[in-house]
Image 1 (cartoon, one colour):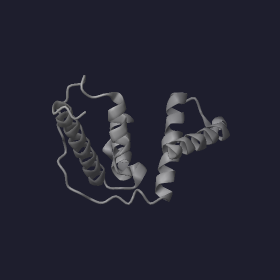
Image 2: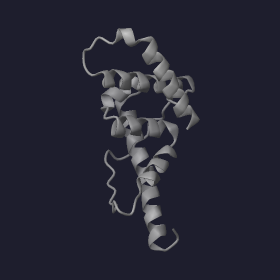
Image 3: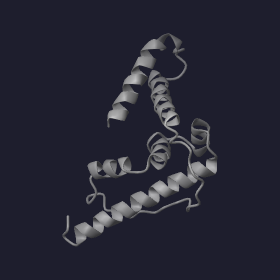
Length: 141
């Protein structure tokens, strides 16, 4: 959490320092979003988190859940528990709407690595959701 706050603070400093570089082409929100994402990516690059391992996983992972059984807080928590390399690709693809091509360019990885890391993230999340549902059905939660 502190790292996210630090990244956000650094991003806002950059935004204020470079506000004169905004050319009014596209939305201001989009320009700011790009700075925030690039700031976070730079932090990850410095930590060598982005040395991702090529893994082969299925392209699509289906998860059947009852939306009433899973809280948003639970979903956010299990996303935050993902290993950093998987969480980064998952967030960029699912939450920020980047394509695998864009992710590969941003992270300097192969598109296949982006795809396999997304699949691995989805498998981990699926397993955690299913375990939670099993525990809830068994009366353990």
